[in-house]
Amino acid sequence: AQTVTQSQPEMSVQEAETVTLSCTYDTSESDYYLFWYKQPPSRQMILVIRQEAYKQQNATENRFSVNFQKAAKSFSLKISDSQLGDAAMYFCAYRSVSGSSGTYKYIFGTGTRLKVLA
Amino acid sequence: DAGVIQSPRHEVTEMGQEVTLRCKPISGHNSLFWYRQTMMRGLELLIYFNNNVPIDDSGMPEDRFSAKMPNASFSTLKIQPSEPRDSAVYFCASSTDYSPTDTQYFGPGTRLTVL
Image (tube, rainbow over all chains, first blue to last red; front, side):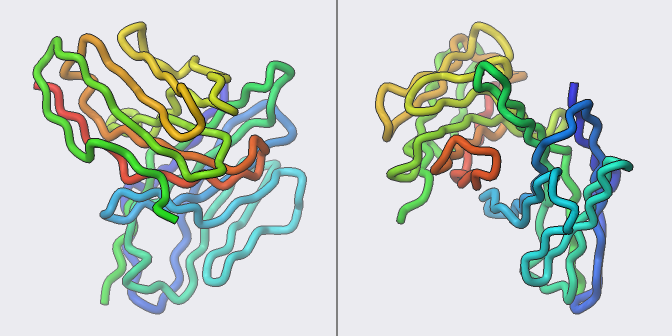
């Protein structure tokens, strides 16, 4: 079975600095999709960035980028120039490719709480 | 667009009572997901629908849980009878396409407390 592990329950970063959140996963599949979601205090889950496993190039969205190491099954999120609004819970998620029955699995990590210090 | 709408936002009930959570997906979205979030287990996918049809309910914890989607604009998650261990935040999410790169849009969640 697939698993997603976020080993950092909480991280802190100074405003304008860079922080990296870790995520590792376990799967026997060769093709899959990875996501980072942000959950601010409002509880709304917001997609930050996604990565297709078959793409070697790391995804980038403005100040957010990932370091995808497929062999190591690692998918870390880097936030550059951190802002106060980045403070939130961040979840790493894995999505399998649809099987023959059309089903797939969507698995989330337990989250990392990011604090941004002014 | 109003986004995914969930009701109620908070629900407090007593053990043994029936609880019904409601979700209205974003108009035009054809996939709908129900999640449960707890401190112990994190965010778990309970069930998802595509074009109103349940595709995979293997995440539903037990027979006390049931979900329906009678039409494209409405879904319910019912717990009967409820138990204290069902206390959690329940999220509904919808997406535009049944594809691997779909972006799921989450509702604000319903915080359920079972006494």
